[in-house]
Image (cartoon, rainbow, N blue to C red; front, side, top):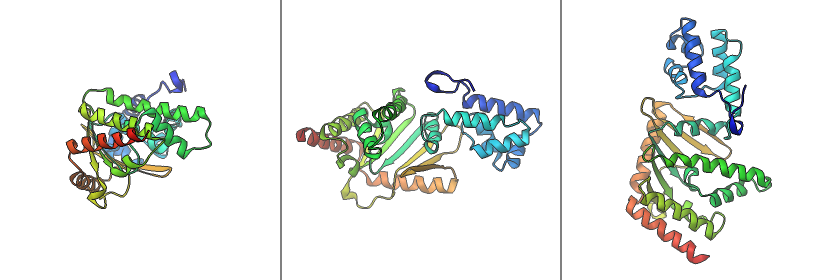
Amino acid sequence: MAKGRYGQSRIGWEFFGSELKRRREEAGLTQQELGRRVICSGSYIGQFETAMRKPQLDVAQRIDVELGTGGLFARMCEELISSSPFTSYFAEAVYLERLAIAVREYAPTFIPGLLQTAGYARAVFLAGLPFAPDEEIESRVATRLGRAQLLDRPTRPLLWVVLDESALRRKVGSAAVMCEQLTHVASLARRRRIAMQVLPFAAGAPGLGGMLTLMTFDDAPPVVYEEGHAHGGLVDDPAMVSRAKQAYDLVSAAALSPELSLRFIQSVAKEYADDQ
């Protein structure tokens, strides 16, 4: 398939969705009927058609079988997945965060990727990929910083972040890198572009065991993204999303207020500045 600038496919998920809708209607099938045939819900077919969700490759393959499209949707799916600069398990989460009206995140170990400076991101990648060539590291840094363009929008999405104190105290890179990073986070909070809280050590055991991102949308159900070492995944089961939201709310309730959190981050940034 044709490639656009920076290796990205010119055929996007919007085209995938519009073509799916056209072929489905030509076959005389409702969204619910096609969903039953490819083992997913009719609402999922609707979300595929509006580019709100992206199908897994095996679902695209079943769509090809049911619509008699000779592998068209599987090929488009493979092309769009391979053209993404993000790992396969994270690509859909990045796609959805651009559509969300609100993103709520709990960060227990590192400053979240959307908030990272170049120096901090570089130190994170070097720690995880110590033998990678410089070109790969710099490419990963550029991709991560590109995600932050989301924050250039004045109000959307609402980004609410709870930072565990360990993410502030862990020296990633150097004292200078940490000072710059925390100053950047404080600046975003002062500009009221993000809502930010700190969960201090004094709060005791956190209600969440790992990184969690909760995304909500105008016209689609909320989803949760959870990530561990070299793996991650989206969760959209209503009961599991509800439990994740409750856990996030408990962590937020135990954290410092946004005003006290800002003072806390500025204080830790000063400690790093004095340590240089």
